[in-house]
Image 1 (spheres, one colour):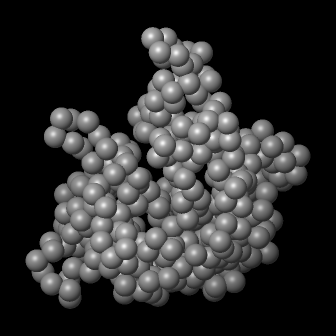
Image 2 (image 1 turned 60 degrees about the horizontal axis):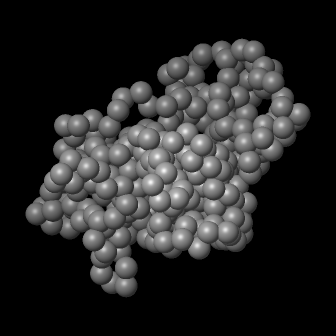
Length: 330
C-alpha cells in the first residue's frame, strides 16, 4: 500500500506497484495538480473532482465515461475541474477530449485547425464522415467541426465515437461594439480537457488520465485563435477594423488582438461563464498558492509518443461489431 503520510511529507519512495484505492487515487490526482508545472487554476486543487474508471475496458463504456466527464465538468456553464483516471489498457489518441478538425483542401489550404490535420485524417479513416450533426443530418465540413473521440484498447484498432452536441458546450463569439464580429463565425469550446497524459504514482505505476480545468481568456485569444499556426484570425479581424486600402500591419494586429479578447470576455460572460484574465489568475496564484515540497510526488506527465501515423483504423465495411461510429452516451 502507498504510504500517504510519508507521501504528504514528501517521502514517497519508489516501491513495488500495488493497486491504489479510489481514495488514494483521488489524493494523488489532487496533489499532482497542486505540484504541476503549468496551470494557474491549481489554487483549487483540493476541490478537484476525481473519477475512477480503472477496470473499465469496454470501449463503448469508456467513451460513455469520457462523455460523462464533459457533463460533470461543464455543469451548464458552472465549470469545475475534473480528472477521470482510466485503465492502463486504454489509449485516447485525441490531445483533448474536445478539439476541432482540420481538413486539407485541394488547393493546399487548410479548413479548420491545422494543429489537428493528422488526427482528422485518422478520424476519417476510422469512419467519421466529417462535418457537424444537425437535425438528423450533417453539415458539410467547416472550420469548427468537433472531432470524435478516438480510442483503442490493448493497442487494437482505433474506434471513433462522436460526442453528442449536448456534451460539448461551445460559445459563438460576438463583440459588444461591432455587429460584424458575429458574422465571422468564430467560436470556442468551454472546457479544455487534456487527454494524452498519465498520472504517475511512481516510475512503475501510472494510469492514463483525462484532466480538465479552466480556460483563461488570453489562452483562447492568443494560443488557439490568433496563433498563425492555428486559426490565425487576427488579419481577418484587422481587415474588418481597418479602413479600405490600409495595410494589415502591427498596430492593426494589436488592435485586433484586443478586440478578440474583448469578444471572448463578452461572449462567455453572456453565456454565464467569465473566463478570468491572466493577470487576475496570476495575482491569486502568487498570493495563495503553496510552493511544491521536495521529494518524490505524484505527477501528471504527457504521453511522449505522438499520434502514430501508421495505426490501424477500423474500416467502415467491417460492420457494427467492429465499427462503432456512435454518439457517445452521456
